[in-house]
Picture 1 (cartoon, one colour):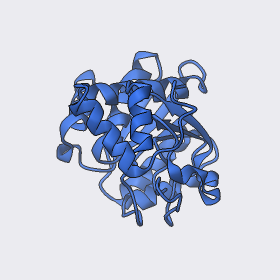
Picture 2 (picture 1 turned 30 degrees about the horizontal axis):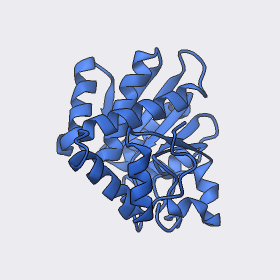
Picture 3 (picture 1 turned 90 degrees about the vertical axis):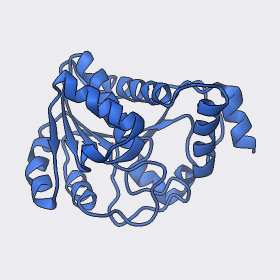
Picture 4 (picture 1 turned 45 degrees about the vertical axis):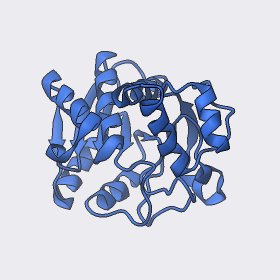
Length: 231
């Protein structure tokens, strides 16, 4: 759990500003922030799993996917079986997310690309056999409605009763700013959110999707977090 637990919630714009200041003003590389976030989220999941437990990690696009790929490395390095499922073409990833995907490839971690609803339905049977499913599909930038094929993946995931579901930063389909859930929204057992709770988390409607909320650090100093929150 992070040292920022008692800091008030952040808006979507404040999250973006914090990342910008950490990178541009302090000189912390974005990939270091991602690494810290992923390591913390993986540690939270490991604390809830038995030794050698297996995890299915669902990755979308953007930095949320990058967090998922980075988490896979940490889980693998601690002896957990991991399988990555790419719901967005990994070739279209850029920046830090692309770097983490490439590392997973070089490590030989299994990465299965799911291009359509049919492939997702077939893969969902394997998710149900895992001890945990990591939701790294959509992040804090999401608003509106979930597009296919992610919407199908979310519906199938919510229909499962076995695996522990951990959402990375925010459950996919939940607007972190307003707390409003899309028609397709991941129902998480645990949400490992980065730096601080988000403003939408305190909305009554959002609580059914979040599960237990755990705040995970990314390496940003508390003074910077408080400065951004008060801005």
